Length: 479
Image (cartoon, rainbow, N blue to C red; front, side):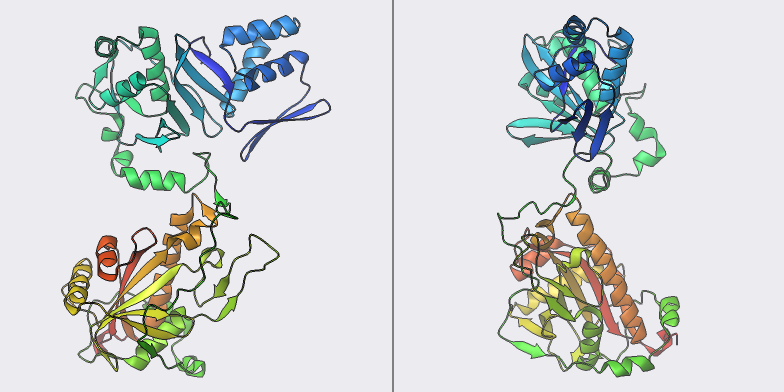
């Protein structure tokens, strides 16, 4: 929709490249070639790259330079730029900027508002505001549009829509904004999918539509921001902290002076185990334990086969983006291996009960001196999340050293961590099944409880997974 409500100018980070008669517009990963550009089109592009103008002013200035340009071609070209996400829309009143609408991806289209005086609007539960550079911006995972709120009155109007409001009601409460300004702002909010019209019962479409009812806000936001296509944030291996923050080492420094060196199992003995397909077919969660506890040599073999460091690879000092990596039995995105393993030992012959940290480089356990009652309370709290009353021999807590991943990756860092947790879960399952042990992953967790127990900083290293392990009873052996 093109009218004079808005000032049109180039979106953020738009780059115009020229090569003789050829033009190329770039914005992030998106590009738009412009062939056979006339002097009028070049004038229009220059205006958009400057401070912009409303549609009538753009046409007046463009046609004055190039009288041969046709109005239909002018409108078609602006629509093409808009649909590809290269134009932002600025709402002003008395030459003061109130809000700015920025498409974040191609496919942009303004939503039309009908019957604005009678319609009641309400904020979507998926809409959220966030402070950036002393401004509020509003987004929703339902759209690929960002709305900057540059004015306190506009921001107050938005927050008032927490309950259904008509435009007549808004005009009474916000007389500082004209009727046309409020209508344009509502159109911006609707295009951002921040508001929707309510039905006769005061409900939004998302409260009636079966699929959206089943999405929680944080899940949909997490999904939309960890995939490209609906945002314009930097994505993937951007190395955003290069030359600013040192890369986190591949392994942690020892956490204790009390170290239990684990026996390294003989890999030749693994050859006499079950067939790999049998392991895959019989893998399952087992929530019962044998009366006979695990023994230290079993635990050592389980950790070695699942998570020991096979080799270390130092950073290449001639390449600034190079970082220290390792190779282990399970894969990890970017060979980052940010996951750490802690063992809450209840029963294990040859090992006293308590909390341990596994050192995958030395294949050893580091005993953490923590109050026994606190360790037991954490154990019981986590085990209760499995939905059973059984106590495993060992509760494994998996943590992530976040900066290890976020130093390189952007937008996908936490999603990558969770994928790595799933990979480690499966490795635990397969190794435990091959060893005739009883494995069971826990879907939930309490990161604050683990931080309080260990003293680890919640934002530096936090729990992201739990896993129960026991010796298996004879009736649960499948091969």
